[in-house]
Amino acid sequence: MKIPTDRFYSRSHEWLLLEGQIGGVGITDYAQRELSDIVFVELPAIGTHVQRGQAVATIESVKAASDIYSPATGEVLEVNTALAQEPGLMNTDPYGKGWLFRIRVEAPEETERLESPETYAKLIAGSTESPPTP
Amino acid sequence: MGSFAGWTLPIVYSSVAEEVLSVRRKAGLFDISHMGEILLEGPDAPGWLDQLLPSKITALPTGRGRYSFLLKENGGIIDDFFVYRIEPSRFLLVVNAATTQTDVRWFSEKLSRAKVALTDESECWGGLALQGPEAREILRRVLPDLPEAFERRAIIAASWKGSSFWIARTGYTGEDGAELFFPAPLGTSLWDALLQAGASSGLRPCGLAARDILRLEACLPLNGHELNEEMTPLEARMGWVVDWEKSTSFPGKEALLEKRSRGLDISLVAFAAEHPAPPPRAGYPLWAGETVVGKVTSGGYSPTLEAAIGMGYVKTPLTTESTRLTYLVRGARYPVTLKPAPLYRRKNR
Figure 1: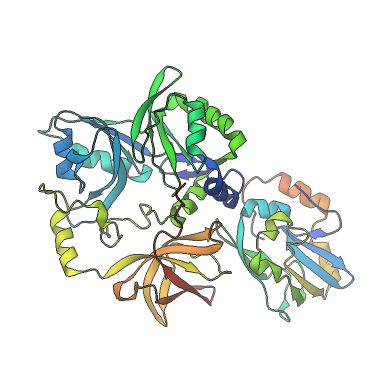
Figure 2: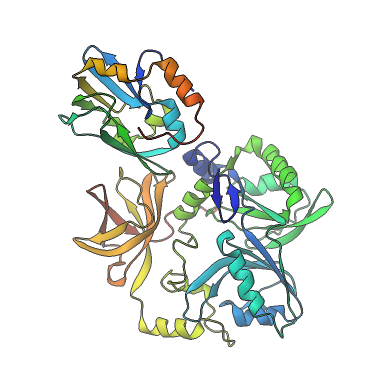
């Protein structure tokens, strides 16, 4: 299970990659495996202001629909439009081409509420069932 | 893994999409041991079944199978299954897991006076389905004595490690292939032998999620979804299963004849959504403008057709291909086009 060390993780299995004030958001390798084949994604509108922990996107896999929670508070600046035609990118490259959206992070201190790669690794090592809800 | 009708089932091995495409392009192996196997035998069996099923069983040649139904008096579908005539007076019924006990009770209640014995082998037999364009070649590597003339819907006795079992050229994927029904202890070695023999042909183990998408692409109905006690074979567009000409009566015959002359209120349709769209799921209403005119019975994403597809019941005036319907997901409308069934048809090879 891949867990890149350059980013933060939520307990609901999203990642946040900070570049200055801009945060990239996606789902983890663990999440994509649990969801299995992702066939559709509904992304937030650009310009939406989202709260940390707010359900902002929906992913539909062959199994079911799952909510995606924003790991940070801020304005949505950009969404990954390639996912509309190729939602499977979330399965094949969850930390790269399968990113979901970018937001302007308003409160960088919020990252203290997220997990480090090490803690997240321990978290998923202990769970073999479906991802818990936040 | 998942639970269903008291069985633990393999849902997905690697990726549903990859498993589906592997069956369409190469081959896939499914564990279908949850299916029920019922044996009916005795000198009265053919004529007795003629009076119970909508199909003309006395006309079914030995060594062949036929798709049929158990019907209520009002024509509602209790179960759908394959009935194989394995010997002149011996029949194998392969029925749905969830309805096996209902079927056994239904037949048992009708056994008195008839010289027919019923054996429920569901707990003792396993089942494997080998499906895909490479399936027959792979089967031949494991069972070289398989006769050359093994036609579609044929069933033959085969032998494995000294035990005999049944192979039918049937399936539930829309591809060519075979289904094997055997005493459960043979299961592991048959599974391993087939997987090994098929490795060079691209055979892979497939779960029941892939099987569900494959049957949906091929518009094969599923009991509990397209088929239930509220629907007759006519609404399900399976009227071809009914032998209207046979002289014997059978449960549901009067109701079906009446319904056939009166016409239908609703009918099963197949549809595809424009890409991209979320998969329509069972139970979603189907809309014509602002009015609900039907309901999705099965839906999902088809990796073969690269579109969200489904089946559902729709009011009959709207079942033409020019009808534009929509389904609603989280407030957004997704248009669908009604398509002739099956949505996927295999090319003749």
